[in-house]
Image 1 (cartoon, helix red, strand yellow):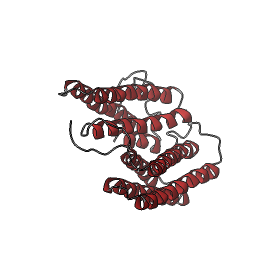
Image 2 (cartoon, rainbow, N blue to C red; image 1 turned 30 degrees about the horizontal axis):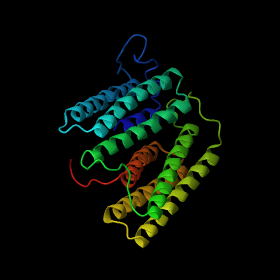
Image 3 (cartoon, rainbow, N blue to C red; image 1 turned 60 degrees about the vertical axis):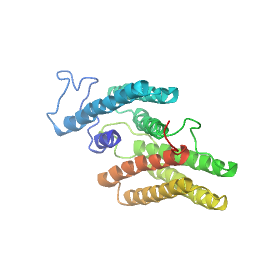
Length: 269
């Protein structure tokens, strides 16, 4: 949800709706007097909901019986991630929506998603391994897909930082040619889809388990969906609705990547 609200800040040109940090502006800590300030303020206030969830995760990890060190470490990883995001958010505003800070803001959000996913998955399994196991060739193919998917997401942030939706009409964009970075991103997505298909074939040849097969199918669906939305938005002049859908799809894609990479639950300890 907070990734979506952050996206709406950029897509509605509300990035400087609150021009100060942590206050909204020089006179008000919270200001919802205009549409832009309302959207920016809502995104900031939603951080409180995320913070509450993180605090709950930390407390429950400590009070869990028996307490497990791996869950405690993962829960505190969320705390670190949220604090880093708060600092990056301040940098984004105080630097007038610096594109590199904006890119970092989104990518750190995905790292938080991965951290939360691993915590969730491991809370219901025996603590033996973090990553999905299997025949070496299958594991290597999974790692290639994870790396390629990560690269596709990073190049996607470069496209956004170069394109028109920078959060404010006067915000600085990256100086790359939009068509060039869009092509690089497109190639990374096509390579990712090709690797997922290769992984699916490899899993069938090596008799991968049902959990791995399901994870591959989910990722392939998410990747094809993202590719279709990406091409649609490119050829229709990157309309806000499609860009928002693309960002939601990127988050779903990353969930699918985490689901593929992380060892599945096998019971409770």
